[in-house]
Length: 282
Image (cartoon, rainbow, N blue to C red; front, side):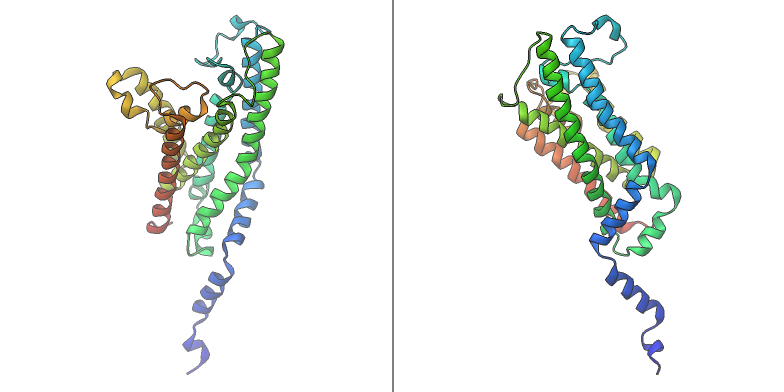
């Protein structure tokens, strides 16, 4: 009996492919996909611009250096109730951008059909998810960190020059709230990415992350009776507010509990993506 009969070419090829498909190589492949798309950098640039530009505009308005009546088209809460939320007002827009970016990255290959090629090259499948998550976090986290820090320090300088109330980085709870915003931005993007994979649809992922995760909790808090507050505070956006606000309201969780709850939502989204990748056909 020939060697080919005992070890058919397709079996040998699969074995060689599996041996060569390591997680670092998959991550490198996902990084190439991510960085070579112009839309990635446009979206990242938009997130950074939103964080800094709208934060500084909010600080200028709060300090009286810009006429507040000129901004009647701003969304509610554009100027925060404390100095930290004022200078980080741009996060209101940045969370939308990063959530959309995550959903696009998660679902993009499903819409083009390239996911079949990717999964054929990576039969174990899960390294694809780890690759997408790793490259997304590595790309988004530094940008969010820089944007939030620039907004904070430059915004505080603007508030101080205008005679408005300010806080220092060393003040109690300030660093935790500012860095918590970075974690919130990255976490929402991860949820969006996982939803994109879970739903296999760019539109579905964007609609779910923007609607169910961001907008619906706000509407529910406004429309439902106060008796629902104990339930609504466990929703992702409300849990995020608990550790990104300098003075969270009594209707929110404590900062520590809020962070744990938000992390649980992120983990739940990732688990959903894992199950979808393992059990469904491409």
